[in-house]
Image (cartoon, rainbow over all chains, first blue to last red; front, side, top):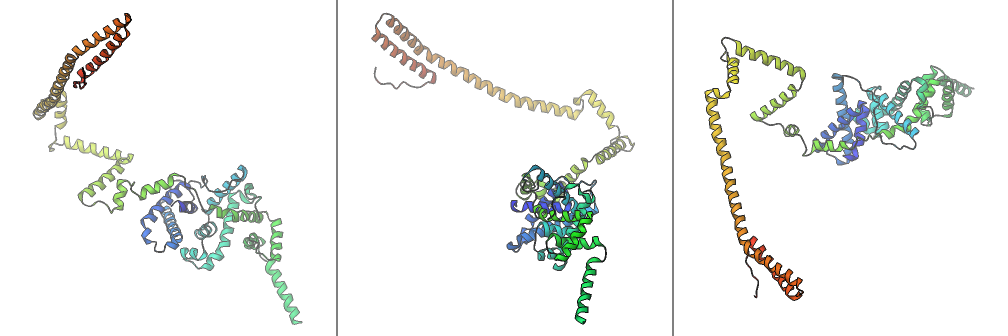
Length: 174
Length: 268
């Protein structure tokens, strides 16, 4: 469980955009995994099976949330514990701010683009698995991937105070 | 001639393709490939030329640049040390009774129904609005039950008030019950008291017996000790030493007298 919990929590956070909600959801996911372990017929594909359960649980959760939205929206800017290397406090701050910004911006993407970013760019899953999970052709994932990242970049730029950007993206072009 | 014409047409088409339409839309379409270093030189130069003059597209390009290195680092989120314990508590033996019941498929029969009703009631009564409404409804029902002329409980509050003023013993049944209870309580209290007193008497008698047994050896010990001191003052060291040994033996006799053990010493 410890081996997979970080990834599941991150995925849940990517879907719901709120850390506390994501941790509760991750807990539910692990309980669900525990209860349905006997349905994992191929141990070699456990990772895929786990990701699929996680994705289904997150989508279910979002669907329920749409039907009965929370009383107030909590901004997704409370993430405190993302794993990363922290060379200097300034870099740490920039990196941490960017992470918050990314997760916040992901909530504003279309469902399919958000899932592609989550599953391909963040979780680095094989295209075939993503296509199977989302029930779309592999070609669609390929063609949408660039557009999804572009959409994310545009939303981040907007959130970051328009094209000016507040300095978070000013030095990092490669 | 035709070849030359075809090459010119293709050149014009390519130039038109790369320069017509909205420049921003065209640049945005190429940005992912620019960031991934997958653009042909011509396109790269065109996009870079656009970025030099378009601030918005430049910021989007910069964002795409750092996104590429940041996104893989978001694959894991540390949920904190308590997370594992919480999940294990829910999936192993540390389940709450309600959860265990749910996982076991629920209790069946009347007991299960009562359990479910009980839990439902606990949840409901904790809601302030429900509690207030319930209290209001209960008061109305109580008033109706005790005030309606046809109610069998009519007059009960007055009777209750009388009982409270006169004490519970004024009720015949309650009075009998109180007498019976007092007898039982006194019986229960009296029994251990007698037992304790009997035991205490035994302790006192035992102490007295020990004291009696100790009288003689204690006198002997005092006598030997006095002799040892007097011999020592007269300078007779060997006689004093012998008296001290006798004192020690008497001390042993005192010890045995207290515990009631026999003297197994050999010799005189």
